Every structure is written in structure tokens, then in C-alpha cells.
Amino acid sequence: MSSEAVKKLIQPRRSFIFSPGLKPELFPKALASGADMVCVELEDGVAPMHKVEARERCLALFAKPQADDGVERIVRINGLRSAFGLDDVKAVLATATPPPALMLPKVMTPDEIIWLDDLLTERGHMCRLHVIIETNAGLEVVNDIARASSRIDALFFGGVDMAAELRCENSWEPLLYARSRVIHAAATVGIDAIDVPYLDLQDLDGMEQEATLARKLGFSGKGAIHPKQIEILNNVFTPGEIAVANARKILAAFVKADTALLVIDGKLIEKPVIREMERIIAIADQVAENA
Image (cartoon, rainbow, N blue to C red; front, side, top):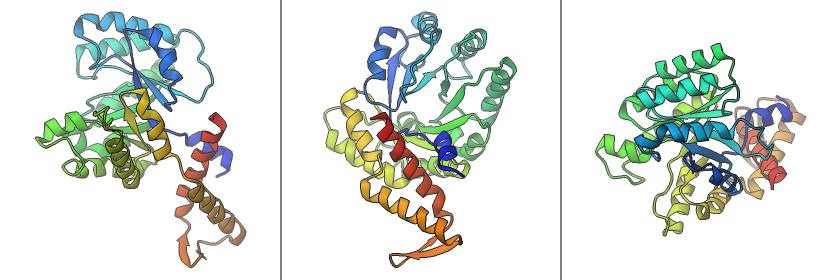
């Protein structure tokens, strides 16, 4: 696969932040925060009495062309098993200018994804999908959910709701198994996995430590609840200079040798490693372009 083709499939998703659907005037500020993804919120952050107003204000944001600024724009709708979620889907189908991507909370079965994909396809909408795994039922079939649609770009781990469902403490060790299941499912189909936001705004060191653990586990990024968290998250999930140089070296060696395995600096490197090296380089190049 050419480097340009890889770039089209891979993009930085190091950080994301929510922007309130009721306050569209805050959307530009969120886009300028440095986050790779900005998600307009229609679900938990909006009270039932304000759902209709938030939906209308949110969709109005996408009636005009969006800047090509490297920031991924997403709308988190309400759960597809709720009346509010059904109304959100109807509104998206009704508009001629849908959001580029939809985030789906509390997904429990692959059928939910297939149903929405079919509706979007029938309407001719190109919306991408981001799926939150935050229920025990969803975790049980997470591999099937990840495979349910080619529209899915990422699985998000919803740690707060998951901890409540599993009756465990919302901390790293008790949720390690659940996180690992999400990582495995995302890796199986070659999509990104994004970790839950760190909720203690005063503990930036703790957030950085958890983000580093998430990166080592295989997550591509992590959520933020405040702009002051974003720079740290971006730094954690940006490939370092040594990693990028090593990836370029390995790729060049494989191209030159045209073989399935090589010994580089005394280490046996097999061809399946190539995909991860391409990913590292693609993310590093795009981060540099958008800087």
C-alpha cells in the first residue's frame, strides 16, 4: 500500500473533547483547542427538556461547509434504543447536510450498527461511525460490533458506565480486562481504540500516567474533559522521534530486501510489523502537517 493510501486510512486520534450541543457558539473554541476530534454532545450532557433545541442547534452547525483543518467533527447522538436516539437518527436522515461522523453510545448489539448503516446508506449519507463500548452486553459481543459496518472508524471505551455495570472501581486495574477486550476487537478489524477521559482535572500527572498505560496497551488516544488536558494527551500519543526514525528505517529495509523477515540492529523483524510502522509514520507526518 502506498504512503498516500495509508494516510487516507489512518489519521491522528490522540485526543477528543466534547462541545455542548446547546451552545453552538462554543464549537469554534473546541475546534481550536488542539484536540484531534471534537464531538458535539446531544446525549448525557443535555437534559431531556433541552434535547430538541440541542439537536436543532447542533445540526445547524453542519449546514455550512466545514474548514479543512485536520480536526475530526463528530456528533454524539442519544442511544439507538431510546426515543431521543430515534429522533436524532430521523433528524440526521432528514437533513441534506449531515455531520461527517456520529458517535453511538451504549451500543449493545451489532444489529444496532447494521440498522443505522442501512438507513444512512439508503439516504445516501456518508457519515462515519464511532462506537462507545460501555455496557457489559456490548463488551460481550464487542468483536461482532467492530465488524458490523465498514463505516466504523473507532471504538471508544466508556469506563465510567462500564465500571458501574461491572460493579467495580473505576480505576485502571479493575477495568484492564474490559479495556483489553476493546483493544483486541479494534485491532482485529484495523480501527482505532480511544480510552475514556480522566476525570480529575487537578491531577494532570495521574492523567499522563494513565494515558501512557493506555498507549502501551494499544489505545490510539484518550478523551479530555478540559482543554488543559489536550496538550499532554497529544504528546503522549504522538510517536516520538526515535520511534518514527526506526519505523522509516524498517520500512526502507523491507522495500530494499523484498523479503518476509529481516534482522535489523540484531532484532528479528517480520513483515506483519510493516502495518504498524506505516501507521506510526502516517500519524507523525499528519501531526507535522497540521502543526
